[in-house]
Amino acid sequence: MSEGAAPADRPQSTRLAILIPFALVTLIWGSTWIVIRDQLGTVPPSWSVTYRFTVAGFAMLGYAIARGERPWFDARGWGFAALLGLLQFCLNFNFVYRAEAHITSGVVAVVFALLLVPNALFGRLFLGQQLGRQLLIGCAVAMAGVTLLFVHEARRDPHGMGEAAMGVGLTLAGVLAASLANIMQATQVARAYPMAAMLGVAMLIGATFDGMIAWSLTGAPTFDWRVSYVIGILYLGLVASAVAFTFYFGILRVIGPAKAAYSSVIVPVIAMLLSTLFEGYRWSGLAAAGAVLALAGLFIALRARRPNR
Image (cartoon, rainbow, N blue to C red; front, top):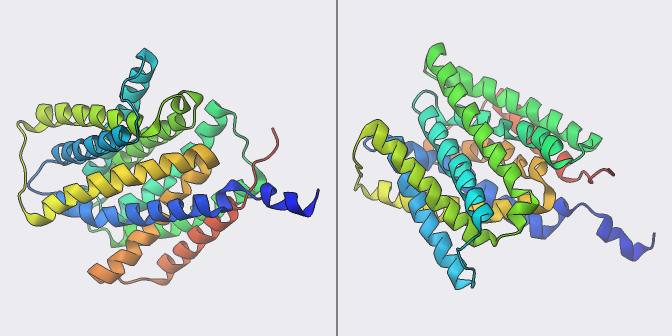
């Protein structure tokens, strides 16, 4: 191999074109836990999710049209958009928002880091993606870190065991829905349609499902006109959904669902750092060790090359 060919052998996941949007997605989603906490209260969770993805969907469609993408698909495309909307923008977020009513946002964020596991397994099962030794080592190191973070957060959680079990169960249901949606984005069917238009339509379909669930469970729409709530909806819809999902699914299509899911491993660390700045969060040795292991696992896994099939 010539010297000039060496850079091409470098894993895609170590390139700036991937690392920069990966870092942005992680920072954005790490900040959402504080915002979501303010969304809980006056407005039922399903209505908050509905407003979030209504804003996100129209923003994505506007962006798609500005790019010359037409949001019209064939039957297969509409079916794909409907399933993506149901899994990613309805079930996933309804489960997560409701989980925060039973356990603290820190525990939810840490449990959601387990997205790494089903993404890797489903990628192997449905996409035939091999799991190399270095990737598996990175997963093991990261999961050790997540375990320490979970133990730390569980000790701080004021809820009882019954509430904790309900919250963790709801979060795991959200993880499963999100993982299946991640796998969908890595298929050839997803690549057959323009991403912005597909995301916009899927978000609006998801918002429709969200509204149907909200109306059936809690009745007519309610809204909180507090400035913080309105700004929160706009931030979650425009930045944490329209922008972040565009970056995330773009990354996923390049480096695969297993590596892309490492954003969920680092999100709790970012959330805890932001909580330190804005909420007076106090670190323990256990939490610090967990954060270090999670970051070390990320470093190991992102440098892993795709094994030969």
